Image (cartoon, rainbow over all chains, first blue to last red; front, side, top):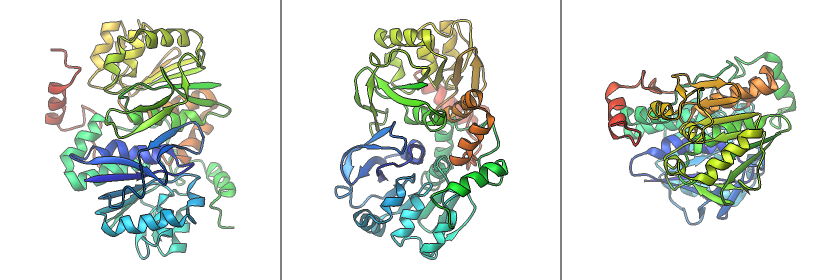
Amino acid sequence: MQIAIVLFDRFTALDAVGPYETLGRLPGAQTVFVAERTGPVRTETGALAITADRTLAETPAPDIVVVPGGPGQTPQMENEPLLDWLRAADASSTWTTSVCTGSLLLAAAGLLEGRRATSHWLALDHLRRYGAEPTGERVVTDGKYVTAAGVSSGIDMGLTLLGRIAGDEHAQAVQLLTEYDPQPPYDAGSPQKAPAHLVEEFRSKSRFSLT
Amino acid sequence: MQIAIVLFDRFTALDAVGPYETLGRLPGAQTVFVAERTGPVRTETGALAITADRTLAETPAPDIVVVPGGPGQTPQMENEPLLDWLRAADASSTWTTSVCTGSLLLAAAGLLEGRRATSHWLALDHLRRYGAEPTGERVVTDGKYVTAAGVSSGIDMGLTLLGRIAGDEHAQAVQLLTEYDPQPPYDAGSPQKAPAHLVEEFRSKSRFSLT
């Protein structure tokens, strides 16, 4: 089984690494980082580069597609070669997944029409433009499409899908080995829980502002 | 302020990326991935490579040192150039930190003697060999030394230290932007919570076995 994690300029690292570290431990699976060109692909901070080991063209039919998000997602919404690859890969995939604003790329490729899906909380409403039905859940499964909320939620998505494919016990083993027993020092991880003025501040300056 | 995240062959990606994605959002900070040589450094699965942008020698005095763990930590325990760099960097650092078995490298460098510290649950007892006092906490702060438990705990460590340096509100903002509102599908993230037979299985085959 092949898992392809898609990289593009200015992606967010944890979006990609959460599923890599969990779902990537699927027995017998081969994970490959793919991009339009091979070589290092930088995150939005510029401080981190992950190597794309294969081109999209060299990876035409992965079993599982993982699309991260990040500030670099916006220009990719008009990148037809990438959207074409997503459509073609999805045609034969067993699972098509995303983390954060990666769901907007799946949506722009026309893959989430009429489906329940999620995204980063600041981008959630934009799913509607593409005919998807946004939900406030952290991980949403609709048929073979599994979308996760912002950044860190890819860990929960990866474990969820791992359990679905390899069984609960294997997913629990991976949770134990990655010691995923979260104890955040604050309870501010969602717009419902964070201080209201922080939520408003981000909404007002977001590239996803609807105004 | 400079944050240096140390890479070595067969490190675990999430150990490094958790702090990068949280602590790395410290206002005005520059994060740099460092290794003995520049270029791509592969994780233990071989499927992921992060680029080291600077050598250790080029990064002699970071303000914050972050040392990840992973299966590749074992051979580094006898890598004197790395241990020498850790000692020298620690001599001028404001904070010296680790995730997972990265704490064993700090300990081997003699930096945790007489200090409370943590590590991956399978490696925890080994801290004693180097005069450190292992604790079962997820994030342990003793003076300027901040150590985190296994793999995913680097996210909690990063947010904790971010709050300490930049204030609670900034850390909450980063938690909100990374949507760190964990909802693991299982409750198996620690040896106290996971099915006992899984814990035993890992203990019996661990490279950290004390037998």
